[in-house]
Each structure stands twice: as C-alpha cells, then as structure tokens.
Image 1 (cartoon, one colour):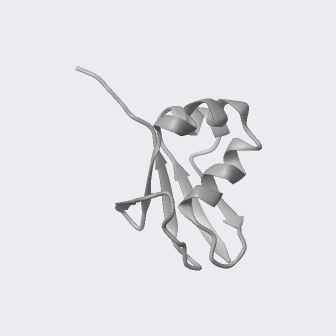
Image 2 (cartoon, helix red, strand yellow):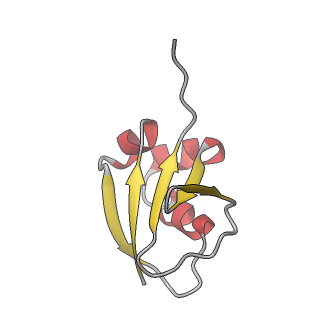
Length: 81
C-alpha cells in the first residue's frame, strides 16, 4: 500500500525531503513508518523518541494501523518565543 509521509522541522532536516511516498505492507502501523525512516537516516533515529505522528491530520498512537492512501505527518516537538 502507498502512503504519503510529510516531515516537519527537524524531521524534514533529518530526511532531506518535505514529503515522500512510500510503499508499505498491508496492516503497516505508524510505528512501521518510523522504523522505515529510522533505519535509513541516523538523524531520524536520534529524534524518533520525541516525534508525534498524525494520520490524515489527526494525532495517533504509534500502533495505529494505516490504510492505503493515508497521509502520515511526522512532527517533532517545536519551541519558540
């Protein structure tokens, strides 16, 4: 199944892209998406414990099962003033 993954802030810097389409196995979870990118990008592996995942613009737990065509956003914590 194909999903679109969008990266924000330091996650975008870690991957070097703002969005990527990936092909994952059926019943893949948000955690599988994090595994996929953490195994390919060391910087993503480092920020992984701190990121939140949203699917179709709603925050989800990492165990959330994805569907074909879902939009997954990887959002690290941000701060500012």
